[in-house]
Length: 84
Image: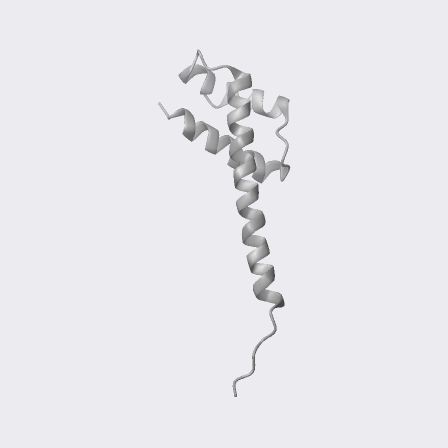
């Protein structure tokens, strides 16, 4: 049995890869919840609470991607200093 946090990370990663969107789709997460065994492994887990956890993980992942992108862009646009 996987940890709930593993399901959350897996859902956030899959959703981001499949859609590229920042807002979680209710139908998508409900399908993931049922089809990937979350419901079986955690029968008392509320779908709405699970959705909130995945949305939070998704937001964190997207913020990291944005920061990495900004750093890479900053490096790319810095003027190249010439050796003296």
